[in-house]
Length: 121
Image (cartoon, rainbow, N blue to C red):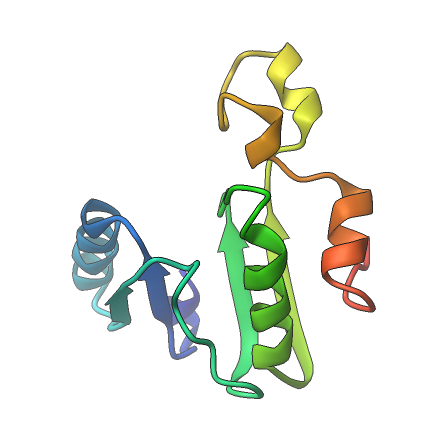
């Protein structure tokens, strides 16, 4: 957990259950974090507010994902980092996890379009 390393952490999620789990885990580890229960399609991200934004399996419908990614990119301070982990459509062949449709997954070409200048592999 980033909070265990001394970083201030704000968790934003549409799932109240997920946020409760995050609060419980933080308490077990003796760290604090801020939680925000919000729909990312509507949640504002203040420009230049964040040194880092982490999105782990933040699978969004393709109709709203580009706008959310643009807001996230604008939310970074100069030199800030966006760390993103997501399933690609190739995952469907394995049937072992992730969203049930390719529309909710990401591919590198889409991410390069949605996050110009931020993609580094």
